[in-house]
Image (cartoon, rainbow, N blue to C red; front, side):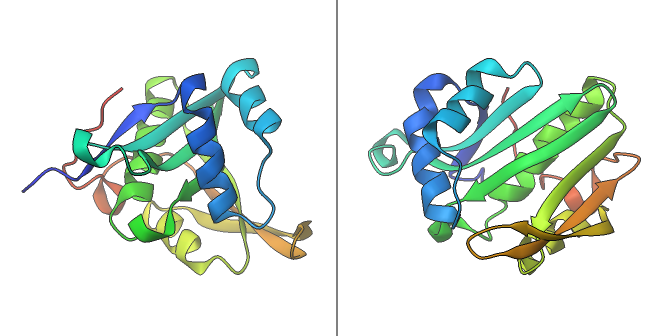
Length: 173
């Protein structure tokens, strides 16, 4: 099997502008530069992963194809924000980002993962269900622009592998 055209890496402050570009392209109510910077540098629980183009010659295009912000707080992984640029969706990038976050959480003694997702975002819900997440509640009118309910999902215990595995992709830390 050929390796993918991208790789998973931890994000750094140097990635902030590209992460912001992905954020603004993917969300109707995006996080601001200040919010992203606060998560990247000021939150001791926060972790950021980016999916970067593997080939140097393609890096002149948008090098960061997607990202995941997640928190590890004691026994829990909280998936905060996941985004992949539209032209690169359905290639396993989001799955690899989530899988890496869950693996990191387990390695740090987390046994449960939680998240909120827009009720209309069926593709994301299907991705999370592929890892074994299940719906636990609905938070009415949680999102703005447009106003929409949030579906709360949980994975307990965290099991890495199976349907949610990375399909043999090398995950670099």
